[in-house]
Structures are given as C-alpha cells and as structure tokens.
Amino acid sequence: MRHAHIPILGFAAFSGTGKTTLLTQIIPILKQRGLRIGLIKHSHHNFQIDQPGKDSFRLREAGASQVMLVSTHRRAIITEITPEQEPRLDDQLKLFDQSELDLILVEGFKAEQFPKIELHRPSLNKPLLYPNDPDIIAIATDCMLETPDYLTQLDINQPEMIATFILNQFMRPL
Image (cartoon, rainbow, N blue to C red):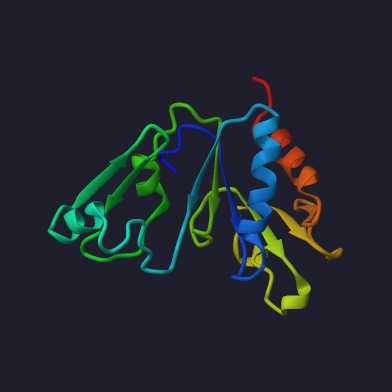
C-alpha cells in the first residue's frame, strides 16, 4: 500500500463471521493501551450517510460532488464516486488523514494485498481464505485448526489475546 504511512491491518472473513463485533471489542482495548486507531470499512451496499430531507442530502442531490458536514463533535465527507466502481484500498488511504493515528484497521478489502487476520468459524461451513491469500498472518477461530506453522492461531472469542498479538506485531518499539 503506497499510501499507508502507518501500520495497516485487515480483518478478512465471509459475511456473518463477526468482523464488526470483534473490532468493536478490540478497538477499546487498543485505545486503552494508548493507540490512536483509524478504521476503514468496505461496504457492498449503497449506503446513505445523510438522510432525505436534511440539508446535506438536498445539497448532494442538487449536484454537489462532495459535501462536508462539520460540527464541534465530528466531521464527515460524502463524496460521490463516478463512474461507479469498486473502491481500491490504496485510493482510500490517500484520502484518509493518518497524521494523528498509530494504526489503521481495515474491515473487508479481503482481495487486496496487505497484512490481514482471517476470522474463521468452521460452523459456518465456509472455506478458509489463507490458502489463497499469502497476506494472511494469523487466523482467529473458535476451534483449533490444522494450519501451517507460519500462521498464528488466535481465539476469536478472546479479543484481549488478539489485541496483544496486534501490539506485538505492529507496534514494536524501534
């Protein structure tokens, strides 16, 4: 990733495996340990940040290609992507303010090349991703798997263990 100025780590899995749930558990642990975390989530849906009837929605519908909403609490930038195309992670990183972050976590973008933790639940009857993705560095699962020695196995139900792995892999002192 040319536009990653800080460490970046993805969480790759099939839908329904619990990526978002696990991230909502890991992020507070990493924050408690002093890290400033950014997150980029890929969506396959045509989501709306603003709602019909709101000024920002009306302005975007009027033809503004970008709309920035700003308050004392947060900022959101809504950018229309034309022509519609599948987003590339590196292009998103170019637009992502990394200046006050220590680590970027990524949900999705599983086909792209960057370090990832695969989440796997055998009960979902989905295939493992690591055999076809050399960028997977660990597997978080809810039962022991027979995997190559180069892959670390983590317990998907122990976010503290996964956070410690992340700290050890990506936040080593120079």
